[in-house]
Image (cartoon, rainbow, N blue to C red; front, side):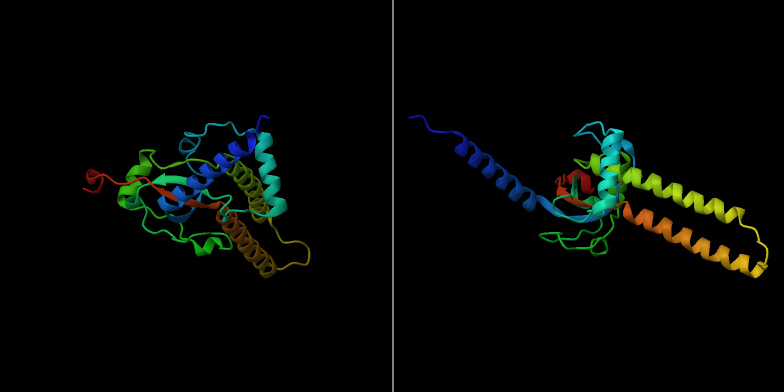
Amino acid sequence: MATNPEPARMDAIAAEVTQWDRLKTECTLGYVMWAIWPSQDSLWGKPNGRVITPERRTEMYRSFLAFGIQNVKNDTVITVVAKKSWIKKYHQVASIDGLKPSDIPTLEWTTLGKAAFSRGEFCPLEGLGRRGGLGKLYEEQTKKIAAMQRELERKKAKKGETEADVADWKRTKKEAIKYETATRDRQMLWALRIIDAGERFDDLD
């Protein structure tokens, strides 16, 4: 009687996944937060050149609105291969589940890192869909901020309002614009897992 090869095949796949996860853990330098939008388009899509359609961007955008921006999770972290000498500080931890963006340092380049980035050597291995969704979120929020700015510029005293009233209104509106802008920019940050690319002696000269 013939045996079913499917369980053995699935066990082999599971073993490969487990080994890959172990290797990733061993090679991980740590985690940083980085604004994935706006950023240089040329950095994205080299290893994974999928076209992110408008429909896909909208789908991701709607998921962010419905469920929040899941930007600090083991399941959604974006992997980047980089050299240890490129980045000043990492958050070294076994898991980022349960952490907040403020728990993880924002990416800061060393002199070597700035040079490598300018050469296009800092390349995310994934995250096109997430970046597309954040791009649409950025665009929608920018429209909202622009509308608030136009409202500010057009504000004139209405009947019964004093110049002091208008000044107070404008001050409040400016604070609201500042808040919305900071919120938009903060939401563009995403957790990156930095995989060690290794060093050569001439890299450190």
